[in-house]
Length: 273
Image (cartoon, rainbow, N blue to C red; front, side, top):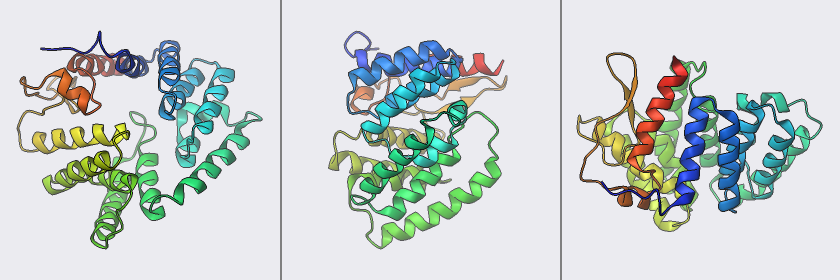
């Protein structure tokens, strides 16, 4: 199968950081995500994730510097900033309140360009998942997901999805639905977002992930390798993947090479031992 490892160093950094995080290798994650932030100069996610790793590695000074970098680039997820357990050690820092206020200012500016209610629903969805792999009451989250799902459908029916980010926000809520119609909407709406804004990498990835989830729930092989499951031994594995799909096609949808997905499953298993 074709690979993009040699041709796409940015993808390598992104997924090197993700693997390091999954393995609890905080210093390595900090280095990889910080390098990614240098390579993707518009990204807010790369410096944010680098800050999480730096905090967990005990390097608060670097973490604060990276958070400021994210904020200066437009990071606006105040709820995520305050809810992410990785960053809890920074909450007593003298700069923390300034970071929170600057993040809120970014959000206020951003709200003017999107549907504010859809953004609020999306942020609530993401905040509920901010500490994935830790103690999350999924029964409570499922109830909230259902409420968000119903409201987003009503907003979509009333024509409230306009900007690329509106479609992306709505698609993410549908991705956390529970049936094939939800996953199909997530796929189509994320594709719409990516068409409106080709630079919206998250929307491209979500379109692929929603397609994979739609296939998985029919007992069919996924295309891109975004979905994981536990086997009979309680080990994480990549769900069955269509072997005809190449890494070049994955890259078109901002999905890493398949080898990275398998490495990520292995890292998750290492952390739960």
